[in-house]
Image (cartoon, rainbow, N blue to C red; front, top):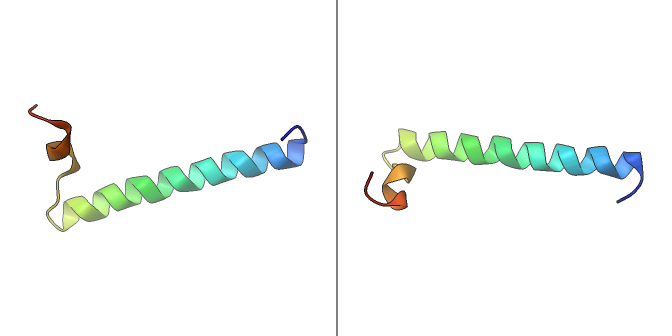
Length: 42
């Protein structure tokens, strides 16, 4: 984890996970599932 090569790999992995999560949220919203409904009454 100390080498710079490994460091950018970790950041790239985290960034890709975020892209997938945001894309998944938009996909679920587009098919009628609202993720904000699971967070309680707002």
